[in-house]
Length: 192
Image (cartoon, helix red, strand yellow):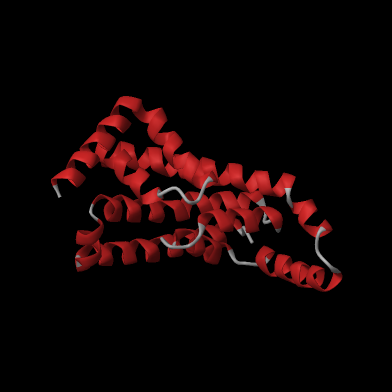
């Protein structure tokens, strides 16, 4: 246990010494390379810079990373995917693209906001299926609030947070608030 605490202290010091930009880049890289541990980077940012600064750094980096990923797949791969698929699969892909483009704004926000949803896959699918950028971006702004909050608390004390009903209730309430906020924004601006 002492070795784990020492390792955590070393990692926190490393992030603190790297500064805000380093903390930002850690989360940004996770958006592009999904096998990296997002919860660790967010927890390190929050432990290193305090909750508010760590939250803002992690939230903004997650959004920038997702936007980069979205555009990468939208402009580099969306047309190439169609070239390598046979006619039967192409019809399925066209149907899938239509379905995904029709996903409501509140549902997209909720999918993004769920802590265990594959963010990288969501970025790819939205980019390839040409989901409107405005819809995708606004969904990110709202949905990533929940993710960063969740991983900020869970990441800083994974076992304690999972077994703490109060923290689980807070996360559930935030998901409800995020969903209701997305419905209100969708109603006001008709994003779909």
